[in-house]
Length: 421
Image 1 (cartoon, one colour):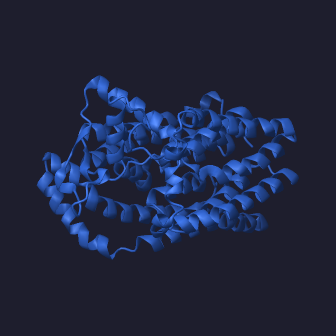
Image 2 (cartoon, rainbow, N blue to C red; image 1 turned 45 degrees about the vertical axis):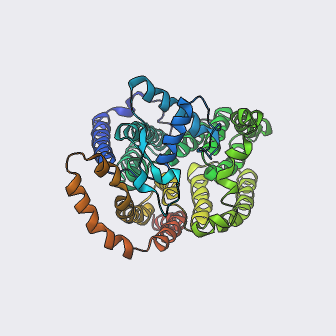
């Protein structure tokens, strides 16, 4: 492993200017797309939650928030900022009521300003992830690979669409997962545990690399105490985050995201099948951790490759499209041209996602009657017939399958190259 992390020349040889150009281009694309397109589901709940905060009802005082509290704490800060600078939250739009049933997610429409405030936060998270990828890539593989990962992540259309249009907080989960990996690489197991605990309480899909890192920590150190520092800090961090929820008696509300999807209601989106797979994948992760520990495997590519394989297995069952973002940084952390097919699949997935989301997501801009609304409405109308013909679920499964195959392709190419040399 080459230690480039703390060298003073990390941003020399023009790298600082190249990174600045990537940042400017990525931010401009995000704000342009984000202004015209806002996916109406979930952000409508964020409006209700912010209204609950203004009513001093807290995170779970009134219906509207159904996740573990980390994202809610972040929404509380964003709500405070909105109140400080006078940003309107949004409005209820009666014509969005479907079949005579009043449903919050159909009727609560954010204001452009409120939507852009949340998007700005997500754009910052995207940028922070790019820098963490750069640090990991620079530390493990060298500056050029670090810059490549920075650029692909920050300019990937799929990354941009999830934060600027879909407006979900998968990137927050990914940020803390990558910070956990960075801390582990730097042999800071307690900090790695803290980051992992936060990541798992944003969304739990980083569980598999989190378990594998137990064996990785032992392989690094050969020390049970070192490994326990990581495990205990993960558990303690998760407990402290959930403690106010437990004390206030809101644990059931905080776990609705899981309990509702373990019933028949979630079967249409593949949640039930995923929940059946989870115990098997957890066992595979624990076996992987044991192998890492026994065989003293402490190289990052093997950790990432194994994490990618197990996580991809979960996503073979089609789920919400934003879940697939988790695979992208893992793919980028594999240092070879083997990642090309998977990256190309994400570009194709981006096209499908944009067509699907834009048919819903122009409504806010059109509803506000802003400049170019009629042209935007006409443009989106051409996408409706295309959207109806696209097969999204098979594409999701194919993307996960190619991601799953990527570590094996990398291993094959490495062996061929090693044999020739």
